[in-house]
Image: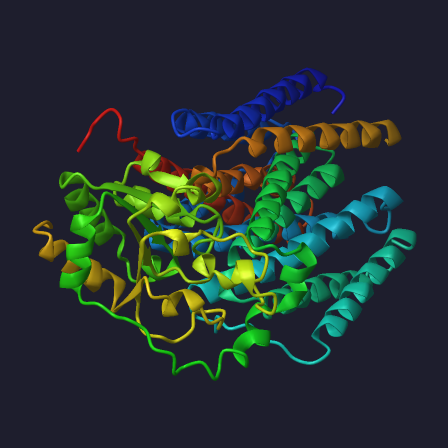
Length: 463
Length: 98
């Protein structure tokens, strides 16, 4: 270290530049016009940071570094090329990988340093592996649920919160003991083991509709664990990158929770779908009006202003390209078509925007909830494709509804409401939607992709 | 050591505030690419893993470090690739009216 003081400074300067580039990278993400600069800044920063690290004189073993970098690149490219509909699970998986890296490094650092670990370092080291461990398994669970390898329904049992709390208390207690007695090596695997189990238990009771919040929260944890690692390794670059990621995830979680009118603790411990499954039972008999693609096409063709409300169902049915054809054919007929995007539509923040952008729908047609809600009374047709809870007027009026207070898209104020839906089965969360029984509501039963395709054919469009 | 620690806490605090300010202005339109980008940036943890492997301190550390590099690198590469793919898709209707 001492004889190489010069190169040490150069490396630190390189890290400084990389940190600045990371901040710029996020800053440029604020608008679609500059966002791609953001990627370049991020890439250059990353190359600088890795290159600078390789310059460190302590590095003697190149072979394994190169092998690992090549292997990681080999895995990363296919992970970057997944279908846009698979983006939520890919994101969850990458949170898991990031957390895995942090946990492994933390573990290695502990065994290299024990029993001489200063108190502060041991505290951040515990934080690093606890956050890393629970983010690793929690994100794997989330990815499994999103990929539908695991059941999407929340899994709950009696005393769940108590079990979770006790486990967490044991992990924290053991960490505190380790801080005071870093030579107690045998406790470390316990801390890691509990964190891994805790991650699984944390995500098991969470349903698909809460995924946007959970993914954001895991994003934040992954960032915080990386920042903790920065404290352990005394690397300001890592602290900065971790803090940026941590605050980004936190902001997104706050936005998502607000959009569902729920607190963090409620999302984490609430197990959404459970309570109302029973309440939804006895309501099958009410009459609804349904329509065919021909009728729907006639109404759409006669409209001046149409607002399309996409939801997770559109993603599942892969209907975004048919929706684009509908957008084209209606626009050609002089109908003004816009899209209303609820913050928690889909399975992760911004999910719908990406799918519609993939289908080549211009982003200035995608309107946020607050902006478009005032326009619904002047809207001729609100066409809901695979969205449910975010349009449920019970959230405004019915105090007994589990989603009461959640901000919704006011589609019920449009002159005509059309809902494309597979059947009258209540949606994922199992909450009945009174919107479907309104006089002005037409139910369009069928697969979203086929039904939209049918409407497009009637309107004489399509390819 | 303790002055390093205080420095580090200052850096963390400032970076967290910058993060909040910068990210608050990100349009909801771009929340998904934002998340995949922060994922890629977060994988800077690879730096710690590289040092671990490079300094060859113990067999155990090397094995863990190699796995860590693989995991983090796949995040860096995958994160940048998919963010770029997503952003390429966002088009405005103003320049070319289809």
